[in-house]
Length: 584
Image 1 (cartoon, rainbow, N blue to C red):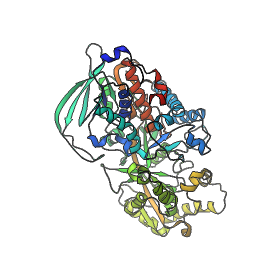
Image 2: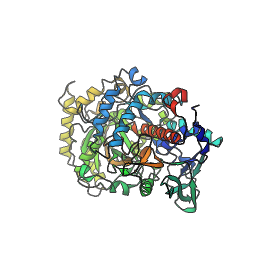
Image 3: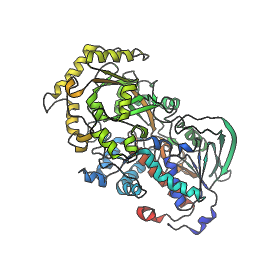
Image 4: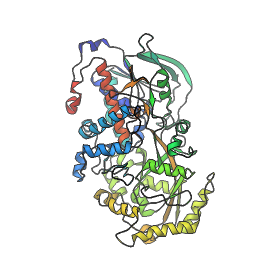
């Protein structure tokens, strides 16, 4: 157990953590190990501990890991650092000062400590490393040069569990206290020093709704709590479409703000605490930086309002815009999220089309969300083998979307497929009817590149190149084939892809100890921020682009920094913090 300073025992007031999501849990874990009293406040009920992380696929960004080495992947700190900074494209002298420092610190942590840190808590990974955000086609541009997406064995719920269990044990011992249905409305400042010393807010009526379901906002009482420090770990704005639209960077992703989204996070991800923290005097930076997906499906079995699910596609589907035009080179499935988003916005429409087939859907359609991956979430080796490696129809959740999803059209020939697509178009305000002959020409042109094992088509070359990574060849990317070759591919499938809200990349500015900064560059005493509300560190550690696996990782890293930073401020000795296994 790390030693603490003799004066540390004088601080008996609890550290107040606003938000019981992953970042808040990680901070509470670090603090509770030092026996520092913690009070966790959350506006939702106990079913929602872990926040958005519970719903995630559970990917974590690691560099030069044992899993990469086992797969023959040559990764390094230097390569990851180049990929990160080339993707982030930091270009703001003042606003990017701390994000740059956080980026360097995070890549170092992902290289030196992340794997050991989470594995020591009992977290495991699938042996094959995934290759997300393959990039914009330039060696010095956005994207992962190598696979770095380490999929948790147990997905998001397992990531939550390994931190929630020790925190709940600490709660039984009296070190930690959870207070649910407590919505913070104000941060209390000391009148003389300006230090954050507590919070005020509203107690919401009891609501035992299942996890993720929109809950009551009826207020039944008020509260005021004083503490040793305040940590804001309340998440971003992805569940609040009005805030997303208000922050939309028309100058960068124009020419207009999209009007229609499916929603990738629960309703309670409302961004309230960003405004409340700003009102207290915190500096909010990079509001216009955000991370929304372009492959969203309306959930046929929704949990929260407007619930959307992302398809995590491999590269074989033919991607057309609303006008039926093939997306430009490098904007292929799974390559460049914000580059694709920018192009879609330029068309004046909020949707696109995948034209694909049964063989590709079965192999290449992975769905975001722990509940959409019961085989991995439930740690079923047999399920993974039968549904992902051997199945000709894909996982059961994928089959359910093909069968029940409003965005899917399944037909035996291309003419009927286009007719079915146009039936969907007729229901879209401002939708564009598709011309069968033009679609036929695009599909046949694509198919002509599969007559030989070589090609001049960039997407075909990407497919062939991607299959040189043997885990993808075996279970992730369908064998190259023509879409119109029904004998090899099964029925044709068209999928309307919607814009899907997800992550906030800007937020509360913090230094490397997760201390909140003021607009004048000074430290806001007693106030900390971690997780998405702080742009996953510094107010925007990702810059303009994510390399994926970095959202959970960012919550873990910034939550840990906050816990240790608070402990240090309170006088505790954290000198052993770098020795992961000694600490755990």
